[in-house]
Image (cartoon, rainbow, N blue to C red):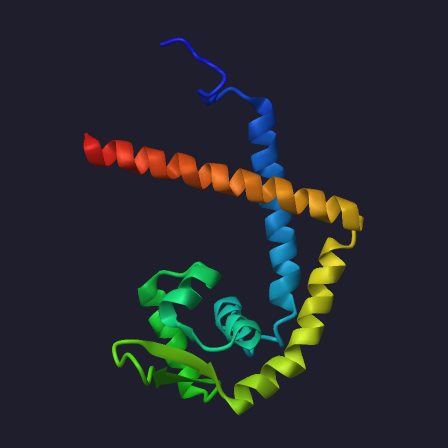
Length: 163
């Protein structure tokens, strides 16, 4: 089958190099972000749940799952741990009892107010190797790449389902 401009070429060194560089950058930035989370008082995932609620307000578990990229079973475990620690609570929706919201408690808010500035500073430090314009460009390009990869993955899955 002849290759056209839309067909991936597995021998494309630029794509493979980008993948390696992207993976290494993600790992380096992630290490800085994880190291900052209070000496092990929170896992990266627990912090992600708290951060989503801190900045977005009450969310359903599904909404949190989309923001922190966790499967529902893993998220339930993390939520249970945060509830047990008193950092969040579950709140049944008053108008639709089938919906349950996650709510950041006063101790949870206080905890986030204490650790968020330090975490934000660590992320800023990790990104300080780029100018503001480079950060905007990188954001646009990575978003474009991610959306395209998601589209290709959906096409692959849909093609397998039809087989």
